[in-house]
Image 1: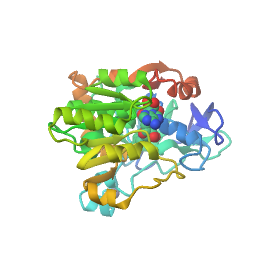
Image 2 (image 1 turned 120 degrees about the horizontal axis):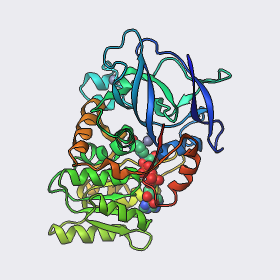
Image 3 (image 1 turned 90 degrees about the vertical axis):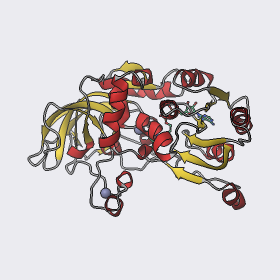
Image 4 (image 1 turned 30 degrees about the horizontal axis):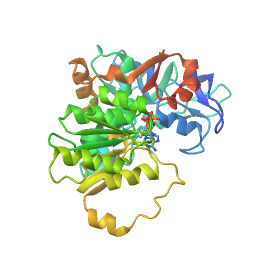
Length: 366
Ligand SMILES: NC(=O)c1ccc[n+]([C@@H]2O[C@H](COP(=O)([O-])OP(=O)(O)OC[C@H]3O[C@@H](n4cnc5c(N)ncnc54)[C@H](O)[C@@H]3O)[C@@H](O)[C@H]2O)c1
Ligand SMILES: [Zn+2]
Ligand SMILES: [Zn+2]
């Protein structure tokens, strides 16, 4: 066991604190990772607000890269010294989803068996089974995905959640590709990643929608061909208009990615897609949210697919090394997602800046 500094949400809605935690030595199937960088994702704030569940205290942070320090006795997939991106989809290989070949839907993903604790022994709930706003963290060995060590940790770590969720929402869940039109509603880290992924596979037009003009500037830099400020303009009408100027007869986008997680923006996505198009919900709603007044005949009549995207339907072992490779070739600008590097004591301030519009990702560097 060793003691390290970490960012913990002790109580619902209260500011996070840097405290000392106990990290057990890795047992069977586990690894201890020395964290080098961890991005601040909106989901961390959801945890702090009690929007995910009530299992306080939470050890926050889950978009991380680092070096494996030690592994349990039976671990063969990774070894001390390996540069890894942490993932929250260590597939089991045995559940119904894995057995039928849909590993990205694994119902029984692995996390560490032992628990990290506060100094007084109170068990911590690591965010998404990771907990990486910490000098070191204990995870299941399968949560460590080896990637090219020449990648910058602050950039590579972002693949561990938001950037992978966004890219995958577009290209895995939405099957966006060349010849398809895309609209993305909500241009934070996740939405902009969906835009970057759409650009990577040659989609056009790529329409960015946000209520914050600064976010739209970033979206354009990352590959959006058009931007819509939905605080000023009806996004449904505007998406339909833009798509019709590019593709004769188009009545909306082929794929609309919702990256906010609210009923009103999901409804915009629903009505902004073309007939038989696809809606991808990657934004995370809170349990109280409902879609009021959606005529079932519209669901039927418009055809197509209404999908949700957990983690961009990614397979870390397939997707992380590929995306790091594209990054190192200069074809995917992961550095552009890193708005600022901050210290472990700056997470609460980063939560506040999330609403300011200037920051795509604050990344804690250790
Ligand atoms: N499904 C997954 O696997 C997964 C993974 C990571 C994050 N998420 C979720 O994705 C969502 C986005 O995460 P993020 O880190 O990009 O958050 P963020 O706060 O950085 O970005 C949200 C964006 O939505 C915009 N927005 C807010 N209200 C809007 C509205 N009414 N219309 C248009 N735009 C609006 C904001 O201006 C902001 O740019 C969150 O709900 C997060 O929890 C999902
Ligand atoms: Zn499984
Ligand atoms: Zn996240």
